[in-house]
Image 1 (cartoon, rainbow, N blue to C red):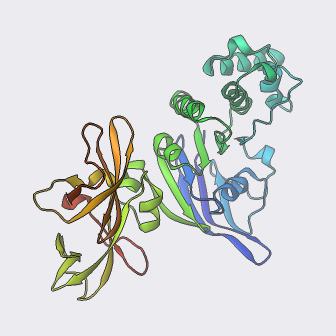
Image 2 (image 1 turned 90 degrees about the vertical axis):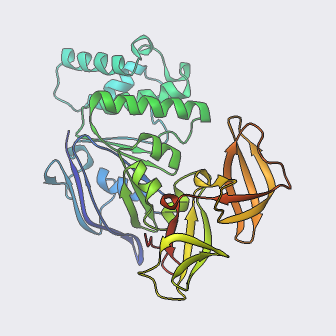
Image 3 (image 1 turned 30 degrees about the vertical axis):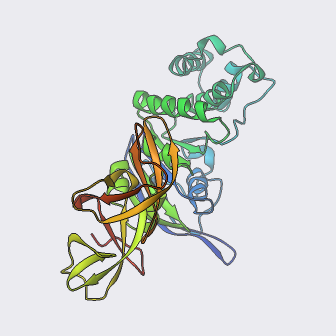
Length: 351
């Protein structure tokens, strides 16, 4: 196992800058997930770590050695791709052993590693099968096994669950998380799915346009987002964002004064006020706003309600039993700890 450090990592293709000085430290044994929309630079970062592309500037350090000038095979990493990249004419056993083809291990040592990995991944009974006899999840486990058998310092996963159906994705998320808890290797995982990031990561790295927006635990990025982008990218449904202002020393949401100090903000300052759908309370004694239910989405234990209000469309979670009907006018409140303030111009968090 090893730590991973990125220092002012930059990447350009001609005159197009893709990464703008990425700085990050990943601790030994940590599970870090890069997440962001398409084109944000997360996969490019992973490919630079793997040595599949050269950095324009900056340093990549793995296990206390700078690896910028090392070939991928010399970086002590293993990568699992979005497509399984397993050989259809080889058995599961031979596919897993392929990762050791250039090693100096003896045959008994190779056999022992294959059996160990197959046991961890629950694939002992599948070793003699061909890939066309396996399910999608089993094929992905073969790809993971081929990476594991090399016992690398760092595992790199490039959207490995994207080709799986919803149920299988959930299963594989759990399997990869359990795998990390068992083997304790350093893992860098790339995905565009914020649910994968929230459920799997020790820390999440949220990217946009080649910049890191925030690094933190799932709880930190959900509860204390650094800016509006993070606030709306993390969480489903995304955070409600409404216009507010500082008037007479108070932060106003329409006609309602928020119970938040405006001492550090100048009179007339425009702000954005964010409240997550989970944090809105129906029938509050001290309502912040009200709206008319325009749409309901029943989800069993809960119902998503879409309200039309003076602040625009508002989304909230309601109980699944006897939720308000379409056309009902309801008042909404929120506790002070669940109200987020952002600068209206920069989008950066104020409190």
